[in-house]
Length: 265
Image (tube, rainbow, N blue to C red; front, side, top):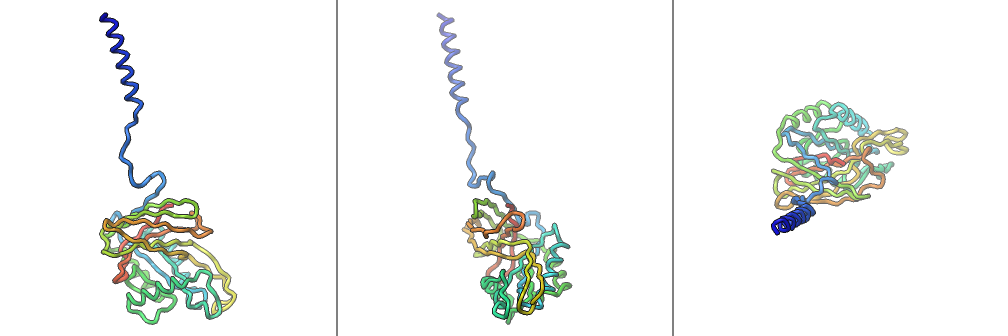
């Protein structure tokens, strides 16, 4: 009798173990699936950065030297926290040559800088450094000096961006820390390089080379916790090798850049 009871107890114990092992322990689910999203956090080590924005046009004969200067700065500073954006404005388009990269949106951004920095009239080529200082785009010495000054400043704000591409859509999730209230996040899609043969206007007959061409801008908002999301439609010829994406946080009162992050695709 005792032996039969022992056998029944053993069978029950085995069945209980089998039932328990059939259940998997579940961990808390993160809001972001990190197997699909890639992340970059800006300035996490407290280093300074410099965002250079060049306003240019293929219709402007003074602009090619500035384009060449910016391309040179890009090569010289590879690996440093220097981010270059080239905006092709559209107000030169009516003077003989339609710049294929131009947009009224970029002209409006330059006008906004005119208000922030109290510059009138706006002009090309113009370089803005971190939204704080402006220079004629060919003033190499002044621009290099400004870059060095900005790299020496330790920023308090940071921007972290996570990205996932789904077909022609780019889904972005971001978080900004220690930024001024009301500051939006500007997402910039950039074509790394291109060439154009100009047939008319001031640069007629020239083959112009461009770097870091801004092709699309989109603004995202931050909630009370400093988080936000943006869904962007990518340009038709977008690819990971020839294009890149940046996120910027900019003070809307002064125009000063607070944080920048390059999106890892």
